[in-house]
Image 1 (cartoon, rainbow, N blue to C red):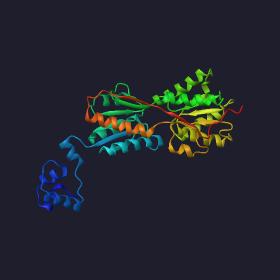
Image 2: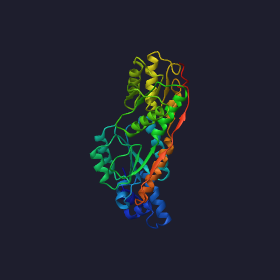
Image 3: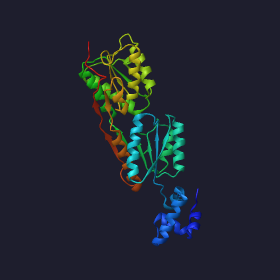
Length: 334
C-alpha cells in the first residue's frame, strides 16, 4: 500500500503539501494540486483515517451494535441508519453481540479503540459491567428499542405496548376469545411491553388470560415453532396466537402445518414487525408494522446532532406502529 511519503516523492513535493491537498488546509497552486491528485490516483493511495482522526479528532465513523443482523427487522433498521449516515458523510461499523452481554461489552470496547465518533446500541440485555462502561464514557450514544438503566443517552423506540394492544384488539374484534401470546425473551423490555399490550386488550374485552396461553421464547423461527407446538398440544388450544415477531410467527405457521391445523380456518396468526418476508409467507402474514426505515434515519440524525453538539438536551422519541391485515387471520369460526 502506497504511503504519503511515496506520493510526495513521485510528485516532487513535500509530504506537507500532499497533506494540504488531501485535507484542503492551505492554498496550493492548481498545477501542484493536479499533479499530486494524479499521483494519488496512479498509486491508489488511501489516506489513513487513523492519522486524520489524530489530527482532527474525528473519524466520521459511527459504531453500531445489534443483537443479530440476520434478523430482518434489525437489517431494515440498519439500512435506514446507513442510508442517512452516508448522506451526512459518515460510515458505519457494525458488530453483532448474538445476545451475549459479554461479547457486547467487548465489541463496544473495540469500537471505541477504533475511535468512532458515536455509538448506536440495540442492547442484548443489561448488566452492571455494560452500565459502568457506558456511564463512565462521554461517547455520544443513542439507544434503540432497549433502554439501559443508569445510562443517560438519547433513546428511540416504537410503541411496543400499543402495537401488541392493536393486534390483540383486532383478533378480539374478529370474535376470538381464546387468544394466546408467544412472547420474546422475558428479560427484554420490548417483550414485556408487548405482553402488557396483549393483556390490556383482553382486559378491556373482559377476557381472562390463561397462564398456559402465554409462552416466552426467543425471537427466532425455531423459538416460534417450539412455542406453537406447545400451544397446539394443549387440551384446549387457542383459536388465535399473537407472536412476538414475524420470525416467530413464520416458524409457528410451519408447526401448525405439520400438526394439520389450517391457517386461518382453524387458527389465526398475527406477527409483529412487518419484515419483508411477512408478505410472502404461506399464507401472507397479518402483522404489526414498525417504521423501521424511519426509525433508522431518525436514529442516525439524532446521533449526528449529538456528536456535533454534545450539550443538546437528551431526546426520547416514540414511533407509532400500525396494523397490516393479510391472509393469516380470519373471523372466529366457532
